[in-house]
Amino acid sequence: MSKFSYEVIDTIAVLSEGSKGWKKKLTLISWNGREPKYDIRDWSEDNTKMGKGVTFSKDELIRLKKVLNEADFE
Image (cartoon, rainbow, N blue to C red; front, side):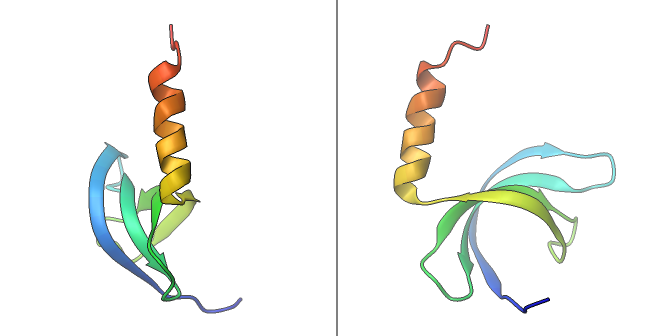
């Protein structure tokens, strides 16, 4: 398994919290020293472990916001 590094630049929001203390967060994160991107994933209580997630560029996040605002969830 290859090594990787990350730096959480900003925690924008906590979206939910599981019964074991893990939190689903929207963060601005830099992977392997690259330009920061927006990321949604579960994080352990002490932020040392993470679950699978999805990462968005700023343009992708803006598009997602537009789609969600226009969606009818009823």
